[in-house]
Image (cartoon, rainbow, N blue to C red; front, side):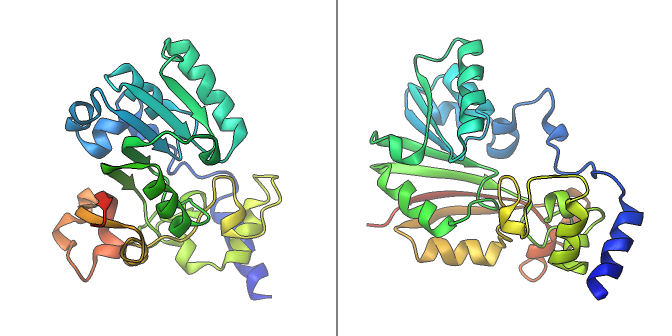
Amino acid sequence: MFTDIQYRILKRISPGEPDCCSGSAYEGKSKLAAQMGDQVFAKIAGKVVIDFGCGEGVDAVEMAGRGAKRVIGIDSREDVLLKARQKALGAGVQDHCLFVSALATQELADIVVSMDSFEHFADPAGVLQVMDTLLQPEGEVLVAFGPTWYHPLGGHLFSVFPWAHLIFGEQALIRWRSTIRTDGATRFSEVAGGLNQMTIARFEKLVASSPLKLASLELVPIRKLHHFHNRLTREFTTAMVRCRLVKRT
């Protein structure tokens, strides 16, 4: 009964798909530069780079066109890999920008890049293990992701208003989603791209238990909440997690 009431409220509040987490903020801009800083292009120059969780390949193609020696985009979804290959072909970088599944490459990277992926991976601990096996001994992993779970829009599509994903139950939100998406998902983890409810604290614990370690960690505050951003409020006021990982010695 309670789930039904929540569903009806959601339908009234948001009868269609909300306009959040659409990526429109990066339209006409370099998402790589916005999330990792302009220095990322100097860092990848002449390097073998793996884009882990590459999606449709926008970032991988950009890196290939801006100085990387070779870029290998990795994703578990063949449909997005196909679109990525088409983007590489259209940009003329197909000779040094490849797209494969994680098990299809044995080449070690100087740099592994992960953009907006750690909140989606079904097995983030396993991903850290795989990243370690794909990294040169002196290599590094550059990670940027968000929003995390307690961010106002941490529910991604389920964020019909700030923190809605924390107020409404999973079943009510999934039922509401079924009116606008038809993939049959029954849990957050089953939606397209996955949603693993990643928090900052959980990410830190995953890294601490992995073969990699934090060389640096930056929690970028939500611009309008930066005055309230601190150790106690970070889960609710962080816009993006940005970090560098290296192998443990």
